[in-house]
Length: 232
Image 1 (tube, rainbow, N blue to C red):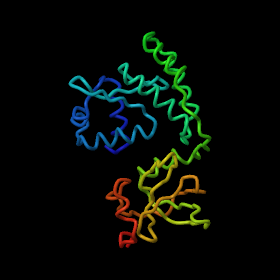
Image 2 (tube, one colour):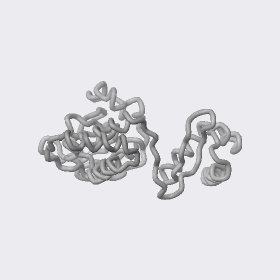
Image 3 (cartoon, one colour):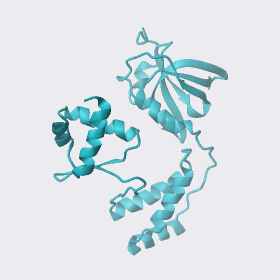
Image 4 (cartoon, one colour):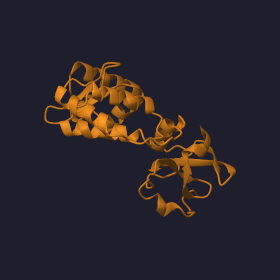
């Protein structure tokens, strides 16, 4: 059974047997639990909405297309979410401003009258001063994918007034005082560096080559700022 056949059977099992666990699916398909988890992630990347429920009676199920995603929040969690969404409007550069405004509106219109009354009071008596910020380019969402893939990419970006064009691997994103940067591993120089997302001009897939960078993350990339022999 090849990968495509296995994943098709995986979907069939989940659809016909509500909330099967990864262990149960692995037994049915005669593969390891790790393979099942990789297949589920791969299917999610392809657009299949797989929902995981935790607990003794938990397991996986398929979310119907266009069905709303439900969150179960306590009263304090709802208030915290509402405040966070409102605060983010004053400084965010994320390309989700419209969606955030829609979420705020949904919070204010949610059915629990007690919580709705508190939220409207907060909306009326708390004001977050707005700072005009340019929205991030749409490459932001793509960068998240590149960071997860760890493929060699050809990046064109501006640094210190010079246009650079390098083969790099994207490591992760950093938000510092509302300014977004991406951490890259420069294959040619064998070191990491930060680039402002706004300075990136173009990104494309480069040559087929594997470079081991999974020991580098956004939490330890400073250790790799100086050139090394990693690219050799």
